[in-house]
Structures are given as structure tokens and as C-alpha cells.
Length: 209
Image (cartoon, rainbow, N blue to C red; front, side, top):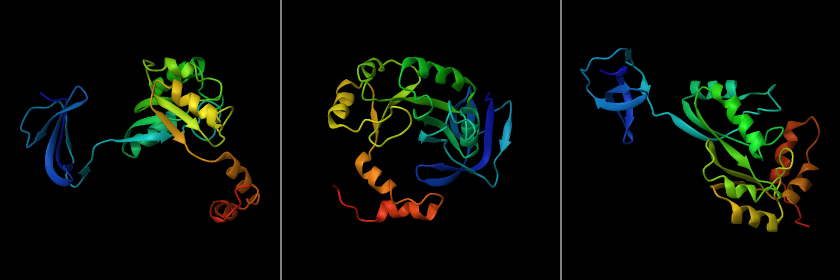
């Protein structure tokens, strides 16, 4: 017996939509086909498209520090409503997630989230020896390196520091790849209060020195 059967939906399988039933047991899909089995619950998906849950590998839920914008609870709820069932959350919070104490805090806060989740550990110019100890860290999906400035001390823009991060990293390193010096030049082109001026900094040709 299944816990739930999703019947009559158009399922996206092998690149095409096929009318199939989906049998779920203990939160896992265990059978796909024309199901006649008994089930505790049946959901009629007639007229609906059934898709696999998506994984968003870069979300900013702003907790701790900026929960007026969003938090782990509201962000994960919005993700589920949009078909996202797993998220990897970024470390540029306030304070940033760059040590075990802050990482543990985020893990505890995340227990109330509505979807599968993991957290990035932020790289800094100083914590490279800590990055050696993350291989077995539960709930850590990788290391995030910001080559362009972010919150707190999350800026690793010197080549020697970037090399240290990669040398000592014990997990996959995701890089926010920007040039800090060019960002500083472009920032001067932005007119305060005028959002239309922002693309100017991206498009205008600028000297590199």
C-alpha cells in the first residue's frame, strides 16, 4: 500500500510529458505507471503537469541580520510554492557564516525550514585553515568565495589569498567571480536614487588603471 498516489497527471519523464500515476511511500517515489494499488490517499492531478522538484543552488534568505527582507522560514516556504524542493543558502549574512559557531547557529535556525537545505561556509582571507575541516561537516554543501566585496569580511580578492582557499578547501568551492577594483570604479557611475543609472556601470567601457 502506498501513502499517496498522484493520478492522471502529465508527468515529465525522459524529456517528454506522459500520462502516468506516481506512487509514494515514506516520502519516496517508489513506482511510476498505471497504478491500481491501494493507497492511504489519492491526489487527482488531472489537467496538471507533474514535474520533479528543482534544486536551487544559490539562495539568499538573509538570516541572520536582515530578516526584514526575508528569513529561512519565509524563503523556504516561497521556494516550495515555486516548485523548489532543495536549496543551498549563501553565507553573506550578518554576521557572515565563516566559522563553526555561526554555522551551527544557522543549522539550528534552519530546522524550521519547509524544504531540504544545506548551507555554504564562507571563505575569508584569514579562515583558510578552517576550510580544511569541512569535509564531514553535516549540512555544509560547499565553500563560497567572494572575489567581489560582500558582507563583513567576505572578500577574498588577493591572488595569494584565493590560492590559499583552494589549497586548503575540503569541499567544492563556488566563486562569486568579480574584480573588486573594477567594481569600485563602476560604483562611482551610479547616481544615488536613480536605478536607471546602474546598467551604466556594467556597460560603459572603463580604463583598467
